[in-house]
Image (tube, helix red, strand yellow):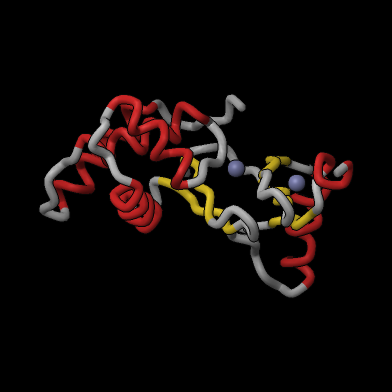
Length: 149
Ligand SMILES: [Zn+2]
Ligand SMILES: [Zn+2]
């Protein structure tokens, strides 16, 4: 899905700046995790990220990938999505707005944007005299493949 709002170089630049400000040293693995998520363009589990990292860095461990993912999420470089079955999945934060359909059986995540739903959310907020700032909508489903099983 070509909805990335920023180049990988620009995101890595922000990461380096962020680490410098915090007085943390840059780590190659942190950049690799970000690059894996950027290139995949989709929502990956920590295990999937670790598998890809291990292809270039045999010393990488799942626990270090977990640590990096939670750091990157906390610093808002990536977003975590909770799924019931397969735990948390992550995606790059710098993507155009979309909502998620999450399968409760297999953890499959589908992205969608529905203009009507976007508009209705604005209206609901307005009805309460409020101005909508953002929203985070998830539809929990049994997906097509799981229904067939
Ligand atoms: Zn499913
Ligand atoms: Zn997404």
